[in-house]
Image (cartoon, rainbow, N blue to C red):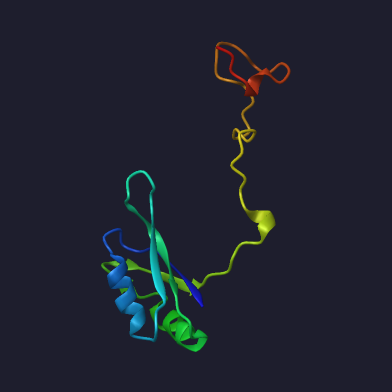
Length: 116
């Protein structure tokens, strides 16, 4: 069972999270998600437990627990359906089609291209 753990204190280590979940059964893996530039925790992570009954017991017991002054959120992680994932292609510029140079306020498709 893949378990989402949110609202984690930024100071928590994967070993600490593993220890908390091992009290309920076998833990295959623990991953705290970090910012790729700073390496700082984003405050959430995932725990993989092979036994669903043990995983559910951990969810029931740890959801709402206070860790280092923060109330954590623990629930079963469900993968997003393929259609709901964000696309990060070069054509998606956040809805503003104004370009970025001078007074170019639209006008054709020039807003998405920069010429130097």
